[in-house]
Image 1 (cartoon, rainbow, N blue to C red):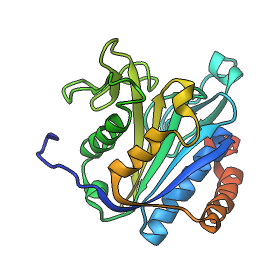
Image 2: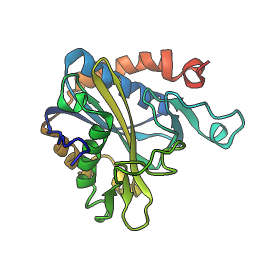
Image 3: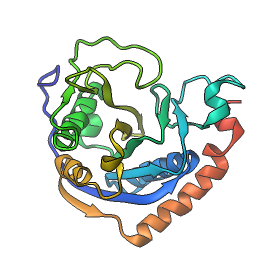
Length: 241
C-alpha cells in the first residue's frame, strides 16, 4: 500500500492520443502544456504517447541550462520542461504525458502517492514488453539530484535483474490540475507507434478510454504552435534569461 494507506482508484474517463508524428523537443513540450490547459479549461483528463524526430534533451523547470560548448548543448536540442525533475536524454525512449483534471483523487493526492499509482499501472502494462523484469523501487530509497536516469528514486521502475532504471517521470501541479511527463527506456520494437502495451497502460489508468477527435487534436496543435513561439522555442525560456 502507499505510505498513508491510500489506494487511488482508476479515473472514470480518460481522453487518449497515440501521437504517431515524430516531433521536435520544443513541439513535444508545447503539446504537453496544451493538453494541460485543456484539462484545466474543460475538466477532462488526457494522456498522450509520443515520439521524437531527433535526439534531444529536456531539463527540469529549475535545472541550470547546460554550459555552452558542453557535450549536451553541442549535440542535442535542449528544451526546458514545464515540470521539475532532472535532465532526460530523449530519442531512444518511449514518452508520455498524463494530464489530470482538478478535483480527482489522483490530482488531490500527494505527489509520491500519485507517482506510485502511475508507475504501478505502467509496470503492469510493461510486464510482457519487458519480459517480466520490471519492478518498483522501494519507498525507502533516498532522493538524489542529477540526470533522471543516473539513479532510481522511490517508485521509479527498474530492471529487477540488473537494477538499471527503466522508467521515471516529473510532475507539476497548477491550479489543481497535474501534468506528469514520463520517460521509459525500451527496445526500439516496443517504442513503435501503436505498441500493444501502450493501450494496456491507458486501460490501467481509467475505466473508460476515448481517443481525441481530429478537431480536438487540431485545436491542441494550434495552441502548441503559440507555445513554441512564445516559450519552448525561445532562448529566454530554455536558458531562463
